Length: 263
Image 1 (cartoon, rainbow, N blue to C red):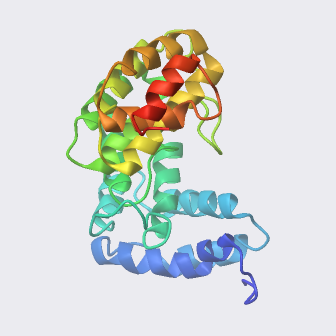
Image 2: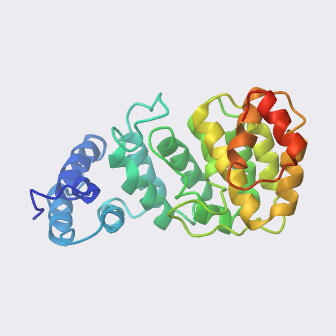
């Protein structure tokens, strides 16, 4: 059983979450073995870290949901509920969705289209930036095509995902080196986002460029210098944030940014 005095984030991903998910799943899948699922989580979660608990839920969902991935994915998408209309709340109101992202990341690799749809729906509420990375590695061309469409989406969560999911040095994720030597496909997506006025998206693009300055600086500097000719305030903001710890500009360029109210 879970300890009552557990104040860490892991406390949200134990038996309490199993009970919560089981009720939602039963609403759309009457054959779900609620008791067995809850007991399995209760028996195995003690002593596990937050990330291991998230993975445990994913593994037990795989065990108790229908074997056919497409059928299981349909059930999980059906329990997601209303979309998140805000830039915040993904880890507060929608914390419970994290195991679903881990589920598609681990068990959906053979089902690209179904998995991409599930990641889209998860992202509209929580985040798919970790779940999408194995698909980028395995299906780089298909993934770029899909993420290019996300970059054009009216949904700012999906626009952010088109940047965040492709970051080569995303925190708490393994390095994504698929495009390290040839970043052009990624840069084309960032081009679509460089004038985005949603802070949630702008921060992702800026942090993404900072990653690239660390892993392949020359083409990234060229891209930023090209962007620096723009008078768009959002592009200027992105450049400022991306280069705040890695200086690439001459004193003249820096003064121009300062006089323009960007720095």
